[in-house]
Length: 192
Image 1: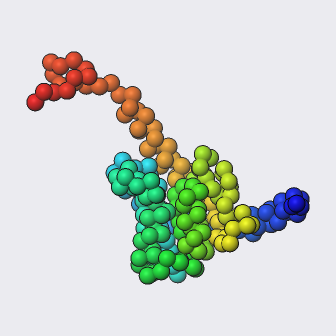
Image 2: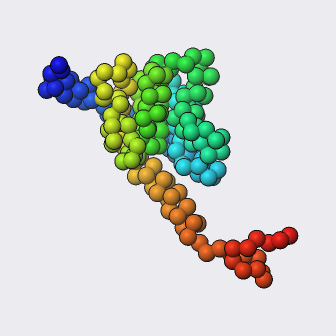
């Protein structure tokens, strides 16, 4: 039998201690992640960008590519972690910081934990799949063996706007009337 009040108090303590204040260079790095996200948007992917830092230098970069690569795990964070692991020659990335434009999902949060990332910085919250407090808080789960320090909300408005604009453009495009080549009814392909 578990002591629920004691467990709740312990979880609250772990959750509170893993939140980190914003650092002076966080906005600079988030702007670079936003630029990576724009590369994804240009390729028709949901615009999320991520980078991994070690001692103030970028060692890994990624932007969403699940559609292009036909890979459901090709989220920006996972690709940035893979790039950093190749660069550093190690699947463990202790002492590194991951900067990402959107709050990580459970899959990405798990990858961040397994990589032993020391610090996570994210921009916009994700109220549908966010695993850093919006839906669940994997970094505050005391039973897990690694806890990255988390700073959320860095350039949140800009990160959120980039995503909102992308989805608004997609909705607009899907509602646009079909235009058929001259002389053909809408819905018919040009026979050429």
